[in-house]
Structure formats: C-alpha cells, structure tokens
Length: 278
Length: 278
Image 1 (cartoon, one colour):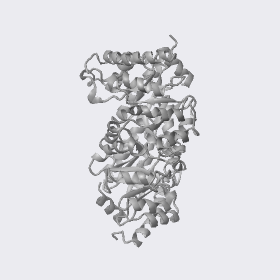
Image 2 (cartoon, one colour; image 1 turned 120 degrees about the vertical axis):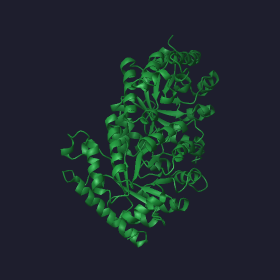
Image 3 (tube, chains in turn purple, blue; image 1 turned 90 degrees about the vertical axis):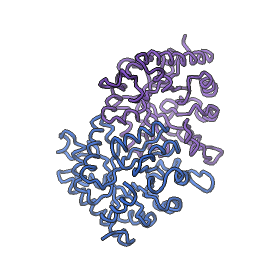
Image 4 (tube, chains in turn purple, brown; image 1 turned 180 degrees about the vertical axis):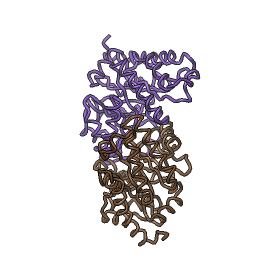
C-alpha cells in the first residue's frame, strides 16, 4: 500500500484508527476458549465488526509467538482473513525487529513476503543496515521506533546527543537518509503529545503511528492538534479499549461501538481540517 | 543455568565457544533439502558433532520465523534436542526482542517458558520496562545489545550522551540498575576489540557475548586480551565459519574440525590464564 492509497482510505472512512490485535488467551470471552483456533476466531469477529471504521489492524506478534507453531498459524490466518476480505486495509506487524543486515533481510522476508503484511515496527539501535533490508520492498513500510509511550523511554530516548538534539530526534534525522515519507513511518507515543511539535519539525510529511491513546477525545484532540499534516499523517492505535470492551458473547458488537466512538471523534477532527471526502 | 555452572562448563570443556545456528534452507547440503525437517536435521547433526567443543548454541530466530509454523517447529525441535541430550549447554535465542512491559512479558514467556532457552538477546532502545520482564525468571539471562559488530552501530551507539560517555556506555551503566552479573550479559562486537577496555571498566564481572570473530586466532587473542575476566567472562560466537565449513555429506565432520580449531585456540588462552580444570 502506498501513501496515496492510505490517505484515500482515511478520507473515505473518515478515520485514522488502527486496531491493535493484542489477543491473549486468558482475556478471551469464555465461550471462545474451547474452540480450535481461539485467537483467530476472536480476531475474525473483531475484524468483521470493525473493518469499516479502522484503516489498519496491528497484530502484536509477541501474543502469537508465545503459543508456538499454533500461534503463528493463527497470526497467519488472521492476516489472510484481512487480506482476502478487506484488501484496502493496512496490516502492521508489531514486531519491533532489527538485526544485522542478513538477519533483518530474513525478518523482512517473514513479514512482507511470507505473511504479506504492509508494515513492520523496527527498533533503531543497530542503525542503518538493520533497517535498510526492510526498505527494499515496494509499497511496504518500516515503522521506526522514535519516541515510545512507555516509562523506560526516558532511559535513552531523551538523552542529549549533541547539537541540541535528543536521541529520538537524532534517530528521526538520520533515518531521513535511509527512506522517505513513502516507505517510512515513526512510532511516537501519545503520552508525549507536546513532543509531536519537535517530531513534526524533523518529519513534517511522514505518517506517525501513535500508540497509547485512550478512548478520551481529549488525548486524541491534543495528538491531532500537534500531529496532523495535509495528508492526515497520523495513525492512532487503540488495542485493549476496543478488543476487550466486553467479555461476553457480544464482545464484537461492543468492540464496534467503542471503535465507532473513537472514529466519531476522528471524523470531527478530519472534517475540521477539510480532510474528508464526504 | 547460573554463572557458576557456566564457568564450570568453560573449565571442563576448555572452551568459550558459542555456535550460531543461522541455518538457511538455501545453504544446506543438497542431500538434506528433501528431508521432512531439513533445518532440524542439519542442526541435529551439527549439534551432535560439536556439543563437547561448544559451551553454547545460539539459534538465530529470524532464520526459523521466515518458514512460518514449520520453522517454529524446527526451532523447537532443535532446542529440545540440545536440552534432552546435552543438558549442560547454554541455549541462547538470538531474537533481539524488546517492547513495552506487557509485551516483553509475552516474549519472555515464549523464549524462557515455552521454548526453554537459557538466554535471549534484547534491544535496549525502549529502556528498563522493556528489559525487566525477562529478568523475573531464575537462572535465565538477558543478553543486552551494547555495541554491535555491524556498520550501522556507528549511527547511534557511539553518540556522545554527556558526561564523556557514549550511548553504548550509558546503556551498560544504566542497565546495572536492572540486573547483575548473574542474570545479564552484553553483546559486544569483536570488530571493536579495543572498545572492550571501556566496556570492562563499566562491567568488569559480566559475561560478554562476542559475535563477529572469524576463525583467526588473531582476532580471538585480541578479544581475550581485553575481555577476559577471572571467570572467563567471554562467550565468543562463530556461526557460518563452522556450520557451513563444508557443503557435502561430511558437513558435520567439517564443522567439528572447524570448531575444534577454534576451541584449540581457546584452550591455550584459558590455560595461559589458569582458567582450566585440566
């Protein structure tokens, strides 16, 4: 998927919502725990109920890996279900990979070729050759960690690295030599909305993947204020607030209601900026 | 495995060699390409031929992931083969994982509980809470990326972070608050042997995992000169030089010869330091 297709989807759906599929066995509704492929069955119903409100789905690979080969099979089935039924949606593998060149090449093969995802989250610590192999695929995306939403982000990401710059800013600036706004995005934690100003100074045109936004309109409004650009430029993720909105047989319906609520806020924001088609 | 058990193994085998199982379909000997579980069959023969010369095996997870569920099955079979037949050997998952707390917890479950590895390589960019969940398991190890051997290491790891310190030094220093020499090791690239002096100033007692050492005694001697401590403190990895030493039916025998050659150098080094039992 290229950036024009992504922006088209955003305008059509009046949404920049990504739904995180952090699907856990012990959080599934009771009636699903005994089915043969419980994670997939849960995901399938969530996806079917929300696909017209979200522009992206983001399976968190750790939650599938921990079940071994069956987990990988259910991850694969989930991705294929999206790919085959809702072909316009961006599929992000939240995998935080990154290694030396020949190993990153294998990870790229796994997520782009074998699993047919559109995008993968990548950790920057090992530098250019850990990222470049992912950029060799046309219409695929690297989503590089810049500023994460967790507490540990303070340990290294805010360190001054000279030139009045902090590490997350150096990561952004250096990565501009590796890719462009058509094949790279950045993870920027919503808990640091004010930092979006700094981020936008360095990468005004790139899409940003924003985790850590609650269902509150307030958070979202702040993120939009500092992060929106002329092509929207934001993908805001919500995982647990949507997929675990209810733990009974009506979980998918409840997920839809929650997704609709967030999408409603997004529609207002996009309309106010003249970024919708309708 | 704790550090006393690891040091005991080093003295017994007169070796600090780790063999990297970067096993690739297209590099397998021709006669193995048609067997049902080719990666596992290759690994099994390599392991059986070299287990008395190596103190650790390090499967590179990317090379298994790229085959989907079958790759995970073969990774699992490989680990179980080591665990069941050579229980004293350290098993390192080279996975470069790291994410927010609840996700790192899942990765820890996968590699420590489900796959029963002893150690996992972890990327530091997301800070403390991306590492701590791995440290909750007794007798397991986090091997944190400090200074990697690839070219991209120059992009961020050498950035000055104030206090006359570079990023890799800050990573080492801060991580001392998270774990200790009994549950953390560090990746330090052998291509930067002179940097080992700096590393040893900050972490004198920890084990270091050293990738990027060729078969040459020279490299190894330099790494040993700057890196050895009173409990050896080094695990030196070689992958392709050993496992792909020969591409015919005698690949395992050739791997043994190569491993024996490197172990021979290590034996001399350990003897000179009085670190062997024999």
